[in-house]
Image (tube, rainbow, N blue to C red; front, side, top):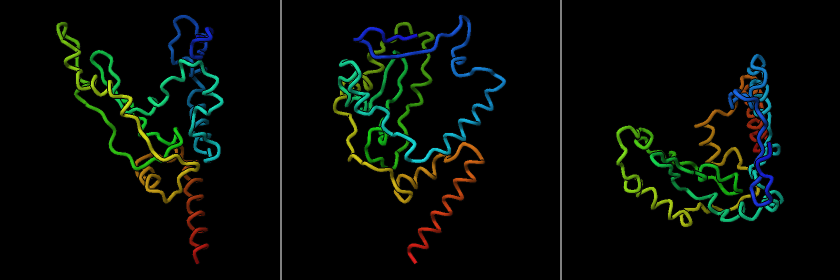
Length: 200
């Protein structure tokens, strides 16, 4: 089903699902094969090389093909702001994915998240003035044009010795499968030995 038939709309497409089928069925296929499919994709993701992965999901030729209203205020894609929906607040944090914008990625601070904003219940709060409750977040949202991230543009992937890559290695799961982990560790050891050989 194509939801973007009107030339003024942003193109969105979704598969047609039979009535009564859960939305997760769009990815599931045959449930008996799902675990094998996940394992296969984990291996494929782990085997990606830097040149196989495009950190910029929207290259110029794609952006230029979008309707004008989809391209307005693209700088806001890099705005660190709270997104508000009545009693919920979630942070838009593009500062945690600057490589997707072709920018230098520094070591990350802890993510913004206000736990008490997740615990708000609507029960018994029919008279709550949500504008007053959410005013600090509304004020941040209203400043969204001044809350955009600016970093130097980079044209290459960070080296393994880059501070961000060292931080990333300590705070993330580098490989999804044992097979890929073994291969990756061997490649890392080879690269280390090779760099030591070049220094000698």
